[in-house]
Length: 94
Image 1 (tube, one colour):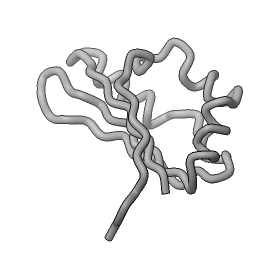
Image 2 (cartoon, rainbow, N blue to C red):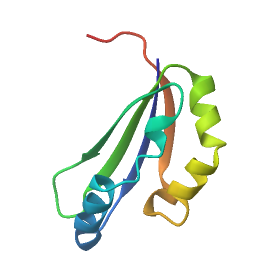
Image 3 (cartoon, rainbow, N blue to C red):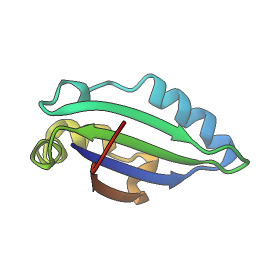
C-alpha cells in the first residue's frame, strides 16, 4: 500500500473555509482505480497545519490519478499548491 501526504499551513481565518471545502469536496478521487481512502487532519492551534492523507493500492494507481483531469480540476488554484508532499510505502500496519 502507498500513502501520499500533503501538508500545508493555513491562517486562522482560512482554516474554517478550508474545513468546509474539504467536507463538501467533489469526491472525484473516490472513483479512481486503486484509491483506498482519504483523511483530512488539522493540528490544533491558531494557525493550523492541514494534512491530506490518501491511501492507494500501489504507486501506479497514484500516478494515474495524478496525471488525470480529475486531479488537475481538484487542485487547480487551491491552497495546497505549495504543500509539502510525500509518498510513503506502508511497511506494517495494525
